[in-house]
Length: 351
Image (tube, rainbow, N blue to C red):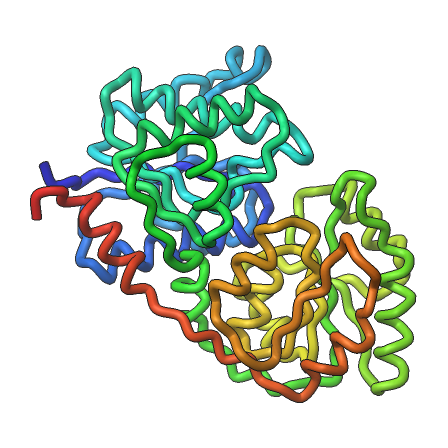
């Protein structure tokens, strides 16, 4: 049966601009393959990237805790799954338990509802891991083993699933966020800005040495360091960013964030999608790799110049990394062909 009613499940409308861009990318790719049916999505109720979500039915996430089970919206996701012909469990890093085991539980709950209601679902634009607990690994295995199709955005995640024992065919394509970023028109000229994206990563990554080196490099190269928040609902992270005493830009939308990177002359990014935004904007970028998904995804983007990776687990060599990419233009060699053919097959398995 050809799907005419699609529910896109993910961490949308929750303040993370990377997730907002992923939703925009999935919709853009559905348009490219000629899908003209109904689209609904799970939405956290936050007002980031409002224009991106206009015209689509928004439903609350499936409840996983006591408080969420008591809300009036507790059945919205279940009812939306019942109505849909196909559910897309969209990216990006939904199955990761380094910060909290909650994420695999939340998204695994949606997969279990699909299975219970006998509704087909695909895992799309995903990264997997790190996963440390047996419980989160079990949930992840269930989710991917029962999917109609699996599409990942990096090879490392594919290896993780294979080691888990997933036998299903796995397609590795590109992050769907790129499909949306390509549609954004921006005529900003480069300014002497060193764009900086940082994130809290438990207690493993300290910012002090990074900030010191960034400030020194910026001063010696006549650049103005400016922080950008990519998770604008994360109050704990926002407060920590403000306490760095580097000017902080808090964009309201994917478009505003993209335009910030477009006008920057250089970027140093810790958040994965900040790096994707920056490279897509053809801004020289040093990506701070705190997790395997950062280096693996950037490798998959096949950018020869203008991009370098600084591993956070080793010796900090940020000055040389920044110097090596400065004045070079990243030109990612990306194709959405695998993305589009995967979605086409998922919507019309017999087509």
